[in-house]
Image 1 (spheres, one colour):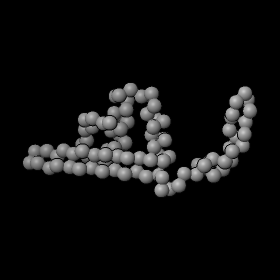
Image 2 (tube, rainbow, N blue to C red; image 1 turned 90 degrees about the vertical axis):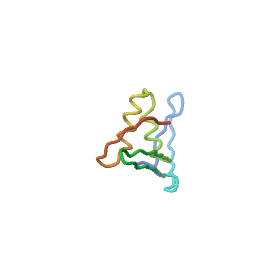
Image 3 (tube, rainbow, N blue to C red; image 1 turned 90 degrees about the horizontal axis):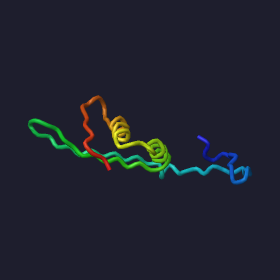
Image 4 (cartoon, rainbow, N blue to C red; image 1 turned 180 degrees about the vertical axis):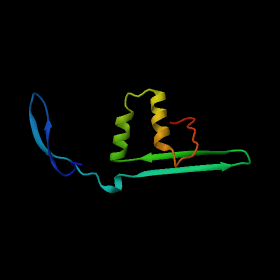
Length: 93
């Protein structure tokens, strides 16, 4: 990581400036993952929510840019799976 260090930043017309890369506080880098499940005699169903802030959000948002719906669903399924269980991602927002 280069936070807190100096970097050469391109401005305009071939001009550059040395600037310090800002440091994001750890309190702004949060990943909250919640899963609510319902168990019946024949099935287990559930609803989950993942909230990401900070660097991880930037990384995931950048990766998903320009992806179609199926590519996004495939990525999210792989990212959200827990252990080696059977998991079906029906929909996402």
